[in-house]
Image (cartoon, rainbow over all chains, first blue to last red; front, side, top):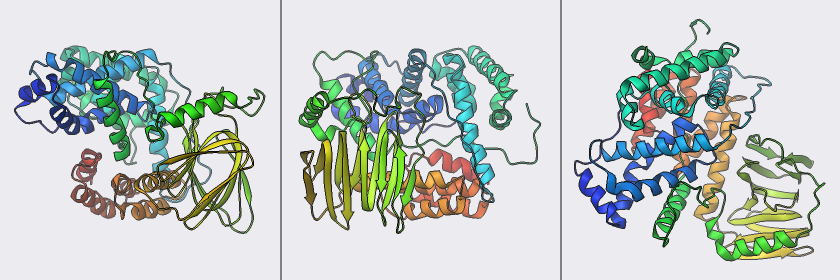
Length: 199
Length: 296
């Protein structure tokens, strides 16, 4: 997934942020927040703690921005911090039971809408049973459609490690999907180019 | 794994954007945390809470805490919060000439005739209701450490501490009668605690940004809840919301485009998605809208 690039003066902006320049910090926050939010949302799905996690991410960003080395864009670096925030969240929380929607009576055209809602719900319920590292790789590569190289950059892992993580997550999900047609269909739909890349 | 069929592939889940109010709250708390002397770094969960209302300020929180402690707790009363928290699907209750009684969260609500009440939130984050018109009586389990239970009417916000009370709205006039317990009422920036046997009223209620944003959010959730049952009505509801201003207009515009696409109405989906990109070029669903157009 192409990300909007920051200006070329990322290093200067990072330096100003590190020196405590509130204007620069606000600038960075406003420019990156949509992508950071998207990263967390894709990994975790609809989540009541998203706002807390966004704050946690930005606290980490501003407290460690002095270590920004300029290898990736500042935007990618912030998303990478978000991915790690999501990882520590997944490791410390317990999966919660998920309610299953039922369709009492459907108007014409509603079936697909309901199927999509069910599918998203089932996907994230199934992802709760996937290893957190694999889940992050899978959601960023397959659900969000980012190139594997970008996922590797975000997770600070090697490309081959990311391929393996995506493949393992898919195996786990496929196992659950064998008894869940809605989930199976959705995983198939989300396959995309990442599947080819990963195989 | 099922074989691919002739059906259209399902799209990736849309990213549900945060409203501007949430971003503003988040930013304020972020700078506050960064400025706090000797603040701990991130690892520990911060004291943030999405459903805490910073506008009420420390006084309100302290008052609520005192009242919550003082309020007699009956462990046998209601209490469903020990059970796994399931999402409470947002909905809209409109009564005609007869009252109706509903359970929502851990409360019993009697909705009077000719009343419109929007229900939103869930048992984990807290329940939020919006009284558009009419009257509703609530009997709510003491909150103690439960998530908030909030009723809004125009710009008036009633936060339950643990009580039975009635909120009535007639146009811009709002009245709250407390049967037992205590509620906190915030109106015009002022906090009032109203106890058993007391009545609070104010007129006129001037709709402010906070109230309209809360109403827009609930209207959005009500439209989303309609999607499966009646997608045409859901699209119409989204478009009504999209015609206004504010963050929920953007969300509604994209949601209408997505729903039209899901229903196979490519022409409408395309128009709405293009409209979204024109109106909200910095919107949270820009990537999704472009993706939708690419799939047309």
